[in-house]
Each structure stands twice: as structure tokens, then as C-alpha cells.
Length: 292
Length: 98
Image (cartoon, rainbow over all chains, first blue to last red; front, top):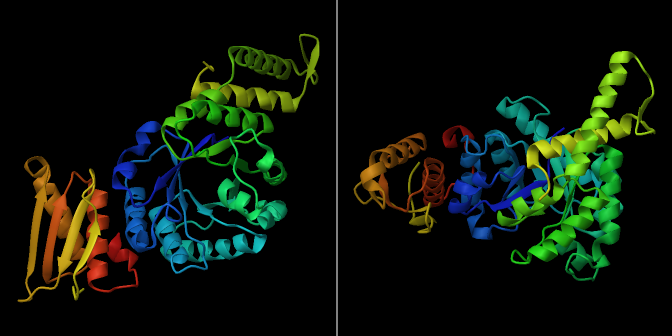
């Protein structure tokens, strides 16, 4: 199971950030060729991302490229750069319906074939940024075998909804978060929450993280490296959770060894979902340690 | 690839470089590199620049580079961008760029 708690945005045109951000060890890094890059720098950013991906700088970190939409003059070239450089995944912005993913999937397959890389290697993420996208979340999430996740993008969404972004505790994203999350779970893929743009507001950030962690999001898109440690710690299990999970795994292993079908721990029945949850807790503990 | 117009790519921010290209009057290739780390990495920077220009088949032009401690990948990307802009080249040949 791949941990995807943190997806750090990096503007594709910024050499200093591209050259150093791996030291912060996000689970995923998202090289941005879309909104973070001005129109006149699209060509330069594309080549910067193409070449940084061809180095070992981000070895061990999942690499994602946010391309421009395919109906712009930049989208297909971005896609060529990402696939030919070996990005793990491509993130499509402004995904409104399943057909957006079908079109992307076909282009990805064509490029993979042309450049001789295994068909199906490049994974896809869809960013949902509109009411239409939220309504179509299930068909988007299930539109391709390449899909590994869907992400809610808050700013465009609240504008589309004629609302405004609150401090993380306000309800303006409630329906969209639940819809995107349910779609992801129904499709068996990951769900990512919106960025929290006030990088100096740790309390507000953590309040939002607590909310999305309880809802069940796998992680969150981030715009600043200092948010990574805060997020990873918030997603780390408590000592009590780790202790219980170890006992669950031990009990499951013992039951399997003894050929016992039903497991009990502290007088309560333990079934497969609880064992899976315990494995996830221990995996997070291994990655993040115990919550401080 | 021929440089037919003046073009610039990159920046003077730390870890980046500024590349200026312009057509050559006498059909020669002139390359000037200044860098904050020329003593330490001048040979490597020049090697990356030369290799990038060779792959793009740039045989003449004036290439002026101000380096601010960029890594090899950034040097390659900024030189390619400046040359493609200077050659007014819109199509990307990924084999040449790799």
C-alpha cells in the first residue's frame, strides 16, 4: 500500500525549488506546469520538469506532473514531457467528466507506445474543480485503470459554487469533500484534499487536517514544505493505536497458525477489515513514527 | 538549428541561470559563461552547455550565460529553451532534448 499523505506542489519554472524540495521528503511531489507557471514561461518550465525528472533527485518520492488542460496549446506537449521523462503520474486539472479522462488515457497510451515505455506505466490523477466535476466524481474515478486518485481543488470549486474559501472549519467544501471521497473509495483509489494557502497559520492548517483525516482522505495537496511535517505528524497514529494494532496483527497471525477461523481480542471479534486497518496503522507508524 | 533572433531564458535567482542567445554576424559559435562557482564547476558547466548545443545542432550564434549555481538539469533546460526561442522552433524533438 502506497502512502500518499502529502503531495507537495512545486512550480515547474522555479529552479531553486525544483533543485532542493526532495530534502523535505513529501510522499508525492507535483511538478506544476499549469497555474503556477505564467503563459510566457510554459516552454521553459516544461523543459525544467522534463530534465529534473530524468535525474535521481526525487528517487523514492512519487512524481506527479500537473499538465495544462488538453484543450490548450500546452497540454499535449506537457504530457509528452511527463511521460518521456518517466513521471509516475499525470494530474489533469479541471476534470469535469469521465470523457476528459478517456481522452487523456488515449493520449497517454499513444505516447507510451511511441516512446517505447510499457503501456499502462503512467498513472493518472484527476483534479475536480467544479460542480460538474463533483457531480461526475464516480464516473471520473472509474474512467481508467490508470487512475490512482482524485483531488479536490478548492479555489476554483468555491468560485464555481459562488461561495468563498473559509478557514478550514467552514462548510463550503463539505458536500464536495464527501462526494469526492465516496467516489474514490467506490473506485478503490486515493482521495486528496485541497491546499491550505495560509502557510503561517499552523493552527488553521491542523484544524483542517484533523477534519479531513477523520473523513478518511489519504492526504492533502500542499503548497509549502513546512506543512509536510505538520501533516505527517497529524496522520501518525497514537501510541495507543499502535499498541492495539500490534496486538491485532499478533492475534491474527496466531489464529492463522492454529487454523482458527474467528479471532477474538479482549473479548471482541476481530475480522479482516480490522486486521487491514491495523496494518495501515503500523505502516503509518513506520513512516511517521508515533504522533507527538 | 539556426539562431535567427535574440532570445532569453531563465533568471538570475539562486540555483538558476540566465541564457541569452543571438544570431552570429560571422556564422561562428561563440559561448561566454560567467558563474558564481566558475572556479569549482566551470569545466562541468561548459561541458553541459557544449553538449546541449551539440545535440541541438547549433553551429553558429552568440550564447551568453550568467550562472547562479544551477544544477546540470537546469543548465540543460534553460539553454534548450533559449535556443528553441531564438530559432523560433515550436516543434519539440524529444530525442534531441533528451
